[in-house]
Image (cartoon, rainbow, N blue to C red; front, side):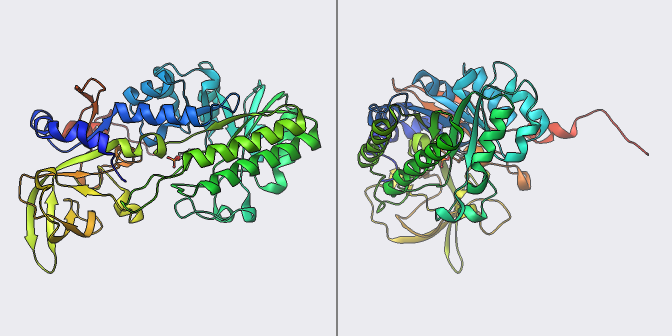
Length: 420
Ligand SMILES: *Cc1c(COP(=O)(O)O)cnc(C)c1O
């Protein structure tokens, strides 16, 4: 199921009032759902010593959401300076932050290592010499298995992925880091995105443990943690089966137990889910403002792809509800479109829906991860507000909508011309 029945029951009876008060469009996130998923994740991996989730900040970079994550004991996965700042602002500190950057610039290393530092996760062997002194005692590398794993659809085939250290380089990477003074080690990988087959994640855990074993044997070091990355999938389509968290955690726990049997210890297990933590616990609420009937029937809503890029970018399916028409049959076939001057600005294509009238609220599911965060301002289309439905049923504005002033802010600067 896309949006859970619990979330619907908490939200839909109040939706008209919320829309009236705040105006559409908005994303609204469900605190109760996010907390439930967080607790389920902790519970599922409770038998692995030192299990920790590092929420992938890019999925939903709002301080109020990050605060929830920190309250649950989660750390943060960051890959840019603003994400580091956000994480630190909500109390994330030192080894609660993993910095998994790619094509990293010198000033990014400086920022990552200042203000209490973080766990530096290096994307390439060539970056070892570019890390400013003193070299951190704890270092991690992102491993790219190349032809050893086949990819999944969003992240692509590992052989073609720009990320990480190759299999052939991995031992050398840790050797060099050790030479520069590292004494504590972690291993990271990220090979999936929106993966619904739990066995793929089990194979990822098996892979990182094997690589850890290989490097330990070669270099006589010990891994403090392995990080299996994010990429846990959510069912966007009603017919998709959800990821089997219980089966996955059971199989992964067996792998860690076996490692412990063999070596007398096991590394901690980290993960950095974004989508799985917040994806289903958010939706984009829009109002139908126009309809047209040309070669196809269109419903025009007051949000566009600046609020949710996934359908345009990946042809991703996002389920749609029209709460006011919940008791009517889906007799119409619509393209649900935004206002942007690009023909892929459609939230749904040839979707069966009940007859929609101007003024109806149109709820686009699963916008809780990689939704608002991916937005942009192309075509002068600004990003909407974000709301949080609290566990006590109250609603809080957690980000205002963009204004024309925001759009023009970068044109407001001291004149500077230069004729070299
Ligand atoms: C995007 C990303 C994640 C989160 O991915 P999800 O699919 O949202 O779980 C985790 N780690 C890294 C390095 C990422 O780039």
